[in-house]
Amino acid sequence: MSESPSTSKSNQTSVWRTLSGALLAAVFALPLAKMSRLIALSFAEHPFTSDNQFALKISVALRTLVVGLMTLATGIFCFAALGLVALSIQILWQNIRSTASRAETDLSDQ
Image 1 (cartoon, rainbow, N blue to C red):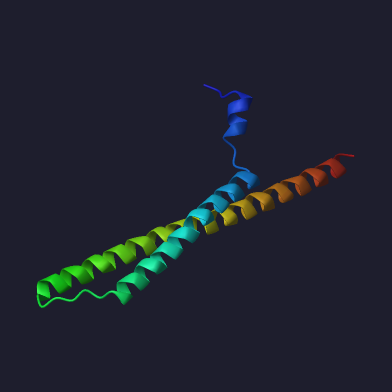
Image 2: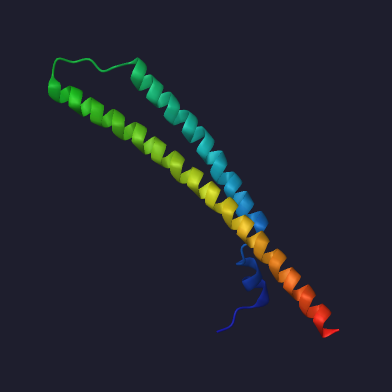
């Protein structure tokens, strides 16, 4: 079963699509980074006080989990943005090379 030219054209990745995806990932990463910083500062400024050792261990575990998950989400979006920028550079490089090879082929045919 063959695809029509319009569907195969819409499925191709382009430099603009990858750069817009990278921009979107970066837009998500910046507020996440700010929020994880604010959460960590809030936890540092307001320590949990209790005489119960079990409650202290649970509070430390939960604080570590919350800060860790926020940092993980920030890292995922940052790596996605960097990967999409790298993909756009690769696509641009391939387009330049294919254009240069087509120009060489055209010159050699004449």
